[in-house]
Amino acid sequence: MRVALFLTCFNDTMFPDTGRAVVTVLERLGHTVDFPQEQTCCGQMHFNTGYRPEAAPLVDRFARTFDGYDAVVTPSASCAGLIRDQHPVLARDHGSPALRRKVAEVVPHVHEFTEFLVDVLGVTDVGARFPHRVTYHPTCHSLRGLRLGDRPHQLLRAVEDIELVDLPAADSCCGFGGTFAVKNAETSSAMLTDKTRGILDSGAEVLCAADNSCLLHIGGGLSRQGSAVRVLHLAEILAQGRGAER
Image (cartoon, rainbow, N blue to C red; front, side, top):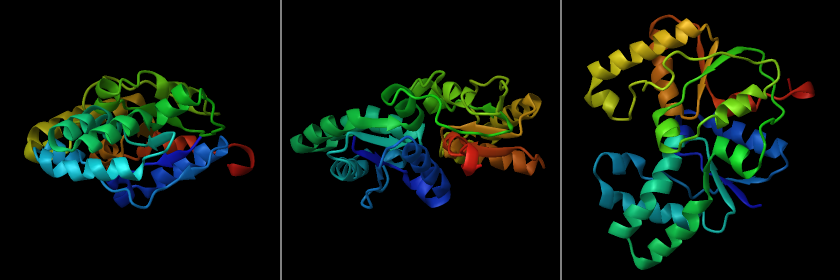
């Protein structure tokens, strides 16, 4: 299977360790992972702020960059959702017939990291060990867009020595929403306060999720409160190996 990592521009800029963690897990499972250097943004920022014609060249670049791979894996539920749901729309409305055909070929091979492990590879135990108390925040895109369901929990429950605890009001939004947190700062802050209260009430040492953008937002709120709770992408937990890799 030819597997490519789509890291996303956000992770590439701010959370490169998440991409390394994805590669660590997939290589541990016996897969070689390519990282096409031509990859850039998927166009989510443009699409979500109304610059849809301007997003079309990014759709074209994505389709050309990841053409021919059996699987394109990304550690971002929001970007995976944008590609699968909106790339065909952007190609239809602002692209050529050739682009529409290429997008139709590439998009079905795009997978969010946890669904690739559970649905495509059929794996829940990836050989991880993480002796900490952890809670999981289902981001809006992972919960309502991709409908990841319990896939992240299946993977976390298989981690050796982990203590997985429930997050109160887990399905509530953290208040990030990209530019929403900037344009509606007061509302966003109120939502974040509710989310951090639930995290602190859970007694977790670590909060994980499938989107670093939400973790950045939540981590900032926890830090400003002086909390010692860490935030980690789920992939970084799964990358913590057993035995000699501890």
